[in-house]
Image (cartoon, rainbow, N blue to C red; front, top):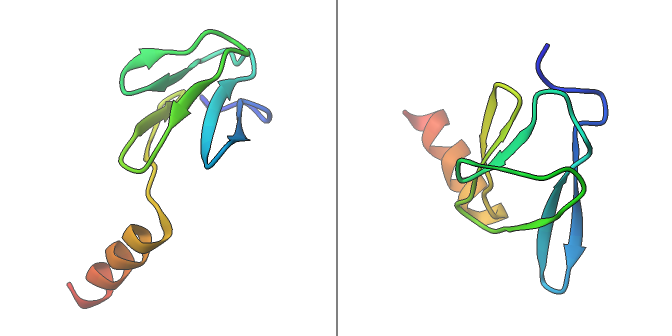
Length: 74
């Protein structure tokens, strides 16, 4: 309900990624900071992102695998 069909998008920049809010109604936050529509901000491993009311943690492939394995065994 709080995330639009086209809420935000990532763009590859060099070896990393920038996150852009697409002008969403409920906003996008990176590390608690509200993004300005269509102005990118870098995101890296360990970055907290919020789309509307949905909280996410950006993880690299290795950290994601480790988290999944801990969940299976825990």
